[in-house]
Length: 86
Figure (spheres, rainbow, N blue to C red):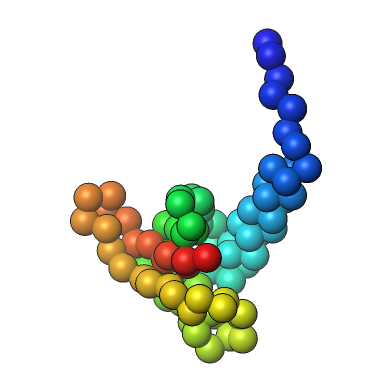
């Protein structure tokens, strides 16, 4: 088995993503599935959990310089999602 070495930047990004997962689980009040995709982070879960995340970013004082987020229902995935653009 060959183990790939992770550089410092990758390690920092992985740690930041782990913190985000923990934070979003706490905000949502339940476990949510997170996915990092080309400049955006997606959370998938219940409708209520996604709106809790949206509320936190619009009214809860979370700082996002882009200010771009969306809640919706994905017909093809059959899941509710929250998208935060970086």
